[in-house]
Image (tube, rainbow, N blue to C red; front, top):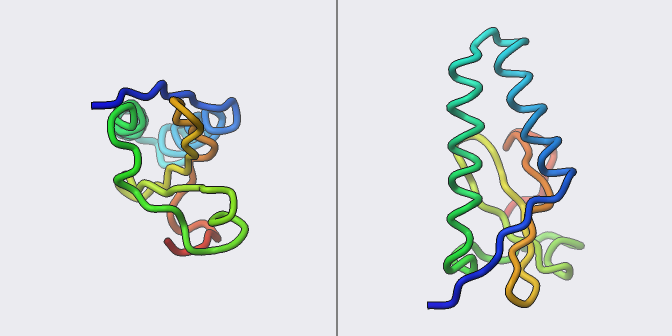
Length: 101
């Protein structure tokens, strides 16, 4: 089975940090924040095998760019596949204004 290298952009890491900070400090649930952060990170790392299991988004310009969306709890992880790499570009709360997949 083909193995991919998973890369997380600085923007996606900043998104994850914002998610953590919101849960930990605004919602005052630091244990939940760490758990959510770890669940998202664990699922991202699983994209090293068969990242094609999540389809390319239907909306434009995401479809043209080959952007895929993976749901993790209430969060959407967006990524592209380039050669032997999976590049995670964004991690957003699913209620954010995003196109449907």
